[in-house]
Amino acid sequence: MEKEFKRVRTAQDMIISIVLVVAGSVLVVMKTSVSVNIVGFFMIFTGLILFMVLHSGYKLVGTSELYRKKEKYFPQSTKDSVLNAVSTSPDSLNLENEDNGNGIRVDTYYSKKTGRAYCRAFEYIPYRYEPCSPFYEYGIDKVGKLIK
Image (cartoon, rainbow, N blue to C red):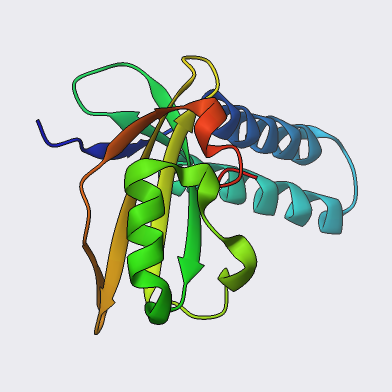
């Protein structure tokens, strides 16, 4: 079965939006100067926009588990070693070459609550990243280096 992750809102996203809208509303309702009212309207507007666009969590399709995502980038020359590490033991991945290029991307979805993590490698083909490995499931302790 192919795994698919979907972006979703987390409780933290909703709390941030609600706090901005409530604080902005309080500033607008209070009898203060016009500049404070403008700041209040800006906070309300920002809270509403964030509510519509902020999705910082990931959900495994078909389940209700919530995951976080971490991305690491590696140069194209390390493709074989990265693919080998992702398929066998992600903790053995050499992070010295991280951020020295963007030819290979390793996505790690993890949930501290369930203790599960999924890793997948992508290769940069002009203008997009294409998967070059399937999802591998690990315990969260095996991907500790990738989620820091």
